Length: 292
Image (cartoon, rainbow, N blue to C red; front, side):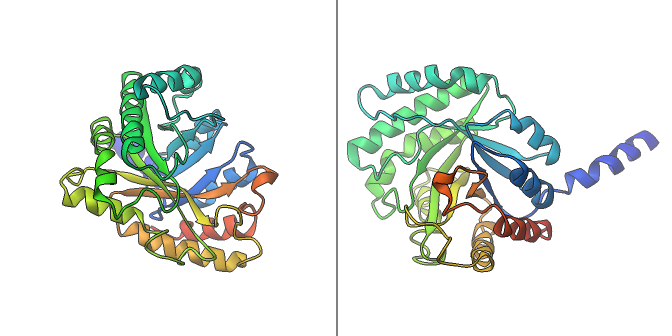
């Protein structure tokens, strides 16, 4: 009994370390000290990695219980031909990377496939179903969708219905449904049609009994952006942090929402207008540290 009690006392501080905040970070291929510092201080529930997956093992030591999402950049995302064959083609390109990185919990496929309608949405659903089946047969889970801000058309139930087969497979394989959410010049601008838009899709799934309360969602990119411009030059680090805290309160009202990864930390110069390295990352991590 004493041994069990000692084990609990040793383990409990780590078990309680995860923040109650649903904010986290999308780390670029150059993930380094800024990412590690954020993890140490913020103790987030998840993180998204781009093309640098060996760090997942280290990050799980820093934050026991963290969920890791991986995205492998692909220059081409063909959306024609047989969707099942295209999923197999995708697997042939990424198989070695995925199987050699078991500490990544979920794997994305295509990124921001477009504002799909009709047959294009049906095609994408079939592609995602096949991709989930491939990953599931290899002991892996998927993040599906990864739709850009403002997509898909959540006012068109026919469009959403075309993706239902993928949502159902996500439930069966414990995969996640993903969207991206940005506001500009503030995250609250256009709410709830940009940030918070995920609720409209979830409400449709429940109202039509597709999700049956089992759908799990995640926002795999978020922040202040209009596609080209980021937060720098428009708001101060303090204002951006306040916007992110506001968004966190939106997310935390929804039990089906795993969390949202802020784009971007430790990225390349191409993304400099969106990078949160420095004051924003430090202030957000401090905020998260106080959320329990």
